Image 1 (cartoon, rainbow, N blue to C red):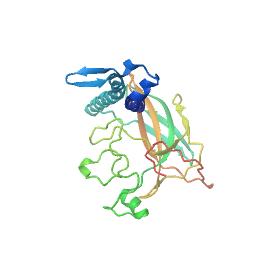
Image 2: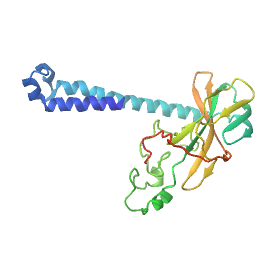
Image 3: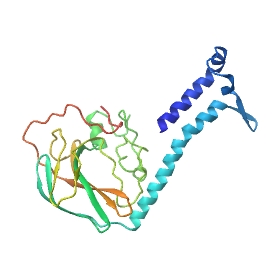
Image 4: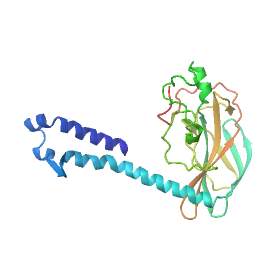
Length: 260
């Protein structure tokens, strides 16, 4: 909603700048540019109409963040026990689960497998592109932040101030940001005891954890509380390496912050 608001405001400013020409050719009626008096200043009527359209999405985002923070604090004050998940088989693109047991009052609904590439460590990434730690940052990266100012997923300097919703700075992380390069398999309903989860259509490497390249696999289980609150439980898994050659022609990018 912020983009349409900014677009409306920019168009209103452009029309206001071209006001004399537009009135002379009769393209826009004169009353649209009628000034409105507020105290000692005059404000164009069109700007007064466009500005609320611009500011309302920002106010909605602030209200949504406040609501998310309240929900996080409620969970922290009364945390839930971890679910019991028994995995019987893990192959290169399939996981079989024998049992899923959630705490009382929470009903699992569906599950899926997802895989993605984690962001490399900052020092390793800078070294790979020939940049120094305190030199000019690479495109798409900010300067290094002090540890006391680092928020979720901002330690590498490529997503500063863009966490939505806002996470609460507590010991246990409640909000996980999606990986910027991420693929996933189909959702599978949890209505039987033995569940078979299939991976993505594209072939991916097995689990890799290194400073430069990290292929992360996980199971995502969507559940619902008795009061209607929906939540997801994420469990990392170690997937086997496929025997065939892996080629991903089109990388599934999920974030505009991913640099080519």
